[in-house]
Structures are given as C-alpha cells and as structure tokens.
Length: 350
Ligand SMILES: Nc1ncnc2c1ncn2[C@@H]1O[C@H](COP(=O)(O)OP(=O)(O)OP(=O)(O)O)[C@@H](O)[C@H]1O
Ligand SMILES: [Mg+2]
Image (cartoon, rainbow, N blue to C red; front, side, top):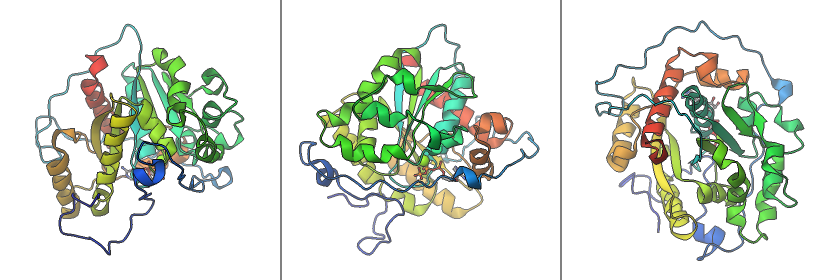
C-alpha cells in the first residue's frame, strides 16, 4: 500500500485530493504483469485558445541575479561544483529524459521548454516531445498546434507515419519539436488493444535518436499509458515539483511507478533529479517544504531551484522560451544552471 511517507503523521484518510492527480494504482491500470484494461480519461485542453491570445511586450530585461556560487543555495546546501559544458564535435545518440509528475501545474511544460532551450544554447541538439493532448508545449513554442495534420498521435497509432513527417524546427536554433494537439487524447484508448502498446513512443523515437544529444518528453498530468510510454523509452526521469506542501503527496506513487517501469519494461531508467519549482525564498513555508524534499531525496534534488515569477506565464503568451524572451532574467539563468547540472549528470556527456 502506498501511503504518504513524505508527510509523516499528517493528512491521512480525509486528506483533500490533489488537483490533477490521477491516483490510480499501477495494478488497477495495467494489471499485475503490466497488462490489463484501465484507461484514464484524458483531460480537456486547458491551453489558451488562439482567439483569446493576448499580446505581451517584454518588460525591460534587467540583469537579475540568480545567486553567487559557493554560497548556501536555496536547497539549504552549498552549491555543488558543476563544470562548464564542453563544446561537442559530434552529436548523438540522445539521452532521453521524461519530464514527469502526475500532479498538474507543477512546471513540467515550462521546464521542458526552457531546459531544452538552455541545452540548445550550450550547443546540444535537442528534441522536445509534446506528450500531452493539451498541447501546451507546442503552444509555448508558438506552434499553431490546433491546425496540425500530423502530430505525435500519428506516430503512435496505426497507420503510423514517419517521424520526420511530424518533426518541426522551432525558432530556437538546435531545438526541434514533435508537436501534439487534442488528437492525442484518443491515443490512450486506441493503444490499449495494440501489441507492445507501452513501447509505441520508443519505436517512433528510435529512428531519430542519433541526431540529438537530448530528447525531452513533456508528460501529461497522469500516470496513464502515455506517461508509461515516456518512462518506457527514457534513460532518466526529471520530476518538477512545486514548492508547496501538497506537492509532496503523490511523489511516492510516482517513484513507485518509476520503479515498476524499471522492473518490467525499461531496466536502464534512472531518477535524473527532482527540480523544485515556484520557490519563494521569502516564505517559511517554501523553506520548510524544501528542507523536507532534500531530507527525502538527498542528492537527487538539483541545486538549481526555479523561483516563482510572472516571467514564466509571460513567456507562454509570447510563445518562446525565457532564455530568448528575457535572456538576463533570473528565470533564464536558472534554466541555464539546470542545463549545466543535467549535462554534468548525463553519463553520455562525460
Ligand atoms: N517558476 C514559475 N513561477 C511562476 N509561474 C510559473 C512557474 N513555472 C510555471 N509557471 C506557470 O504555472 C502554470 C503551470 O505551469 P506548467 O504548464 O509548466 O505546468 P505543468 O506541470 O506542465 O502543467 P500540466 O500538468 O497542466 O501540464 C503556467 O501558467 C506557467 O506559466
Ligand atoms: Mg504541461
């Protein structure tokens, strides 16, 4: 039985449920041997429709400080030394990273876009995969995803198309995209009857892995079949978590799912790291949650912490990463620091 080991003695039994949490257990969804019938209901699209699109003007891009090195960082630990990434003279094969948390609105999509853009700034070739029918990743990169004929859906569900037919360049050099839209919500139901349904994304990505250094998969807020597909083809999983008390709930379920996918589908899957997002150093609450996260996950917690700032919602409207929208902002610097940590932890980079 999975309890809430990260919240000892609190909120047991009558706990309010997390918004967006798909609390279904692995066994309920996939049966004991990873086979079975439950399919979670895909959520309705929540990204802003184009007709509601508002225009934003970049506020003056002041040089915001993100904290000096060799000091105690927001995690309460001294910053660990992270080397400057070395330039690459050849590319691939890619390390596949699933950006995953079944809790909604914790910064998965924001982190996928901005980590991807920061890795590209360091000369890495990056492919972003939108594995959420909301299409927020595609929208966040300015892609009119509602109108696309070929999306990730067409890579997963027969008759499949070639991956190159769906692949798109973005406005950021070195950053490509496999876009999605609401069509993908049907995939989870249609895949149920397919043989090797957990490996559908793996099969689609395989032909292009040699071209990229990193593939980042933006998962939807559930632990359904699409997310299992991401975990089944990933080398590592990065878990963004909002620095807020209830975010700790559900992490046991997530790490349990990662363990099960490792045991049954993908033995090379590792926990890449926990990324604390929407941190507010001024509040005792944020600092207390951070202390608990570090106590539970130790070194897996990235030294880089993403602070809460209105700059991120702005970038979603602008349809570009913060690294180009506000390159000197603390948010841009934080995602560059995260990219350095991700490269340093990547076994293929060293
Ligand atoms: N560090 C931050 N500070 C303030 N707002 C943020 C931050 N990171 C993300 N946001 C905003 O919070 C909202 C949710 O972020 P995001 O879409 O990245 O989360 P998500 O985990 O992908 O959500 P979902 O589960 O719905 O896919 C967005 O409006 C985004 O702009
Ligand atoms: Mg998202």
